[in-house]
Image (cartoon, rainbow, N blue to C red):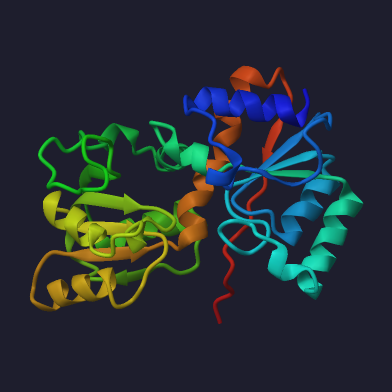
Length: 281
């Protein structure tokens, strides 16, 4: 199969009409659509270490969810004289690997490939709450799965330990009473916990769905965290648990290969963990 063949099959399986180039970031970051592929790497982000690992195992193609070139649009016009850009570009050219970004079509899939992978990793699909039928006007995920789950009753402390174990984390951040009971959980992976353009969306979700805790990717300390901290300090059963952008979305790429099996003709898709970007001292 060529890179073009694989991309065509991926987009076809999402069920999403192919987005025009000017309206999507799902584009080639390097290489050619005509390159033949015998092995694929899937990853959250094509970091230097991921690129080296792909070359080491003989993969001709990397499918990355997030940017290669440091901005949401992967614009390189500002990087032409940048040493980091030039050295990374040299590495990519030396390895010959083709990098394609799979972001917009993945999220626009009716099942959202990031949530699909999250559910596979956590074994949570069975706990999905039905879509809200009476959401307020302007609610961002009205009449569609909105990342809300009713899990077996646990505590915030126990839930934190579960995520640390499943997602191989040294540290998770929380706001709330570690001993508080948790049953109704909302998950806003990646940038979802920033509100997706509507700052109060996470708070609306928490209130409308009567959630005990929100599992967050990115956070802005003076929005959702401030809301939850005030609620907690007034004795309300509210909390957040912060995984970070990378840890909250990586499972979608970890389980991408299984989703691709039906059209890959036996070509392996190998997951390479881009790993948390932080070191904790």
